[in-house]
Image (cartoon, rainbow, N blue to C red; front, side, top):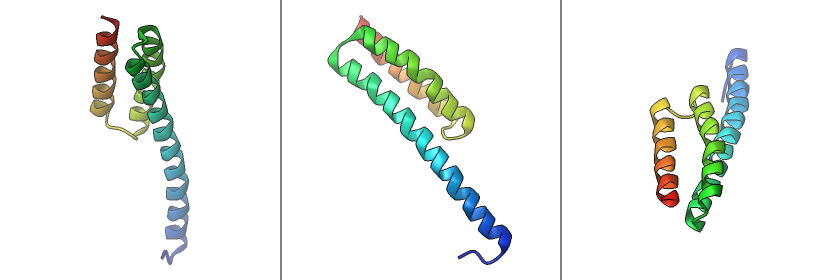
Length: 88
């Protein structure tokens, strides 16, 4: 348990940031799930629109530090390839 005032404040800050980061990650996963569901159903137009919606969400998570930049790029790239395969 934190003893000093600054350590107590740090634990409060960490708790707040954790909530924000969790919500951002959860939101991103929900967007990714929509793309994957559209891919599974074979609906190429829905998959493309869902991909357009998920790209800024993933890159935003990367810029905020929830994901590494390369991880975000890899996720977008793999989703785009899967959407392209459905369209073809």
